[in-house]
Length: 173
Image (cartoon, rainbow, N blue to C red; front, side):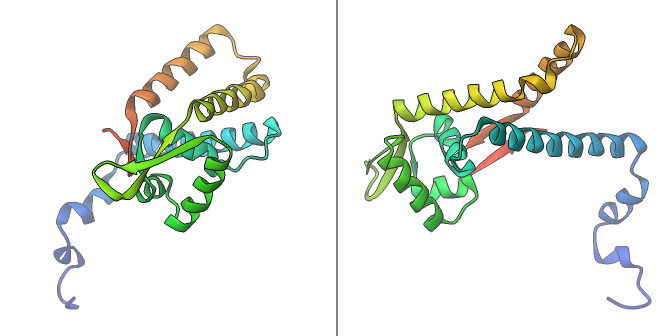
């Protein structure tokens, strides 16, 4: 970059100027989203700890992915879970042993295998979700009906804006 040339000429102008003119409303929205993400993560961690279940979060995440996106090849499952393939190989091996998953030959490529959720895996996931929901109940015990309506609406909005596919969670604008 030349010293005589304005910095913004190296990038599209809107990339340089837009951050300088962002509105308070946009900043407030970004802050609300950040608070939501951090708070949900804290809530899930606290609920998992309160449940007393020592099962790895990676197991629950894997079951959750396969609940809606199955069957998947091991590499696809690793990508969706954001772990390395050798890590997913270890996770899946334990879950196969526990009867939570099944593995079959990929009909499109006999060298590959497809991983699917078993009925036992589906039941264990449902039980865990009910357990963690119960464990956070006391946190929300003092909410009145209006607060519950807001919470239900917020949950519905979040659920409608997020979907999963084999390689990532998509956020719809």
